Length: 362
Ligand SMILES: [Cu+2]
Image 1: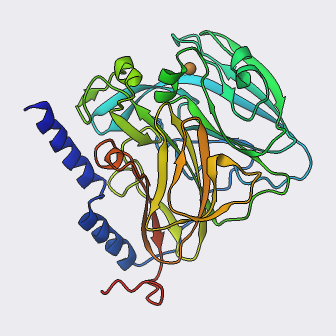
Image 2: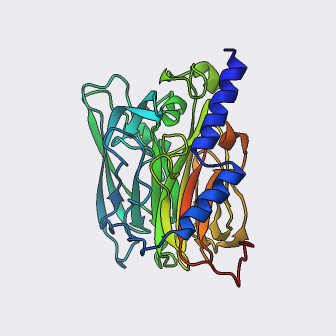
């Protein structure tokens, strides 16, 4: 089989699996709304300023519903954040693995959430069994390398530093060693949210996603281990463009959709790891009714934005109203990354049809 045939076959399989064809997504939407709909349980509220979890213990795929609860305190606090570098062999697709580099075993790394004026004590630990050095650069920090200059840890080392969060926003944090582009591509990035003193508008649910691209010597979907390709990274020609370290992770046929109810307002936090590609972040079938471009939480949100470019090394916070049932597919609207490189995640909106808003003709 020639390379181009392999590519076409893999691409067709992926699009079918993700339910992303037009007919397929319509059918899925119908099925989801036709079934009896029990209330969608709210994910557990995680107290504290640092939280994450994976879908299953053997995967790096971060559970998008596990993130720290919104800030409720109104005087400065101190937070202790512990980050441990871990190598994890995780499936990108069934039968295709990659040896990811992570903070705390997940992609994206756990969300850190604090309030403007708080103090954060950051500890980075590199277990002795690792081979590479790591560090952390947080874009919420004033100082050389955002922490990268004083947190580089060789295997067996642990280092700590403290900083005061003087400005609000949603920021990336990432490994900052000399070949950081490779380490980020392979999973070492997450989000730190510093809420403004007055907090953020309340919403019904929050979801946390990280987009990054992976460069491999093997083609898309080739079974076995997908090994890292520095050459393709330098050429900025990714094999996979993913959310949370897997191809189309949050669709019915993989780990399940993210779920919400008709009438709710939900917030999506997206951290764009890159290392090189900008995410043209768009909710198919919805609109960002409030959007904080590049994570600029100090500013008034923009309203009714369709697609926002989220640069590598940046973040986005967007709210959506959910007035009708069906599927909202979150994508990078550079659409070949969806049809051929694995980029998609879906929110399933469950509830009664609202024919005065949308009459689907059925
Ligand atoms: Cu690293």
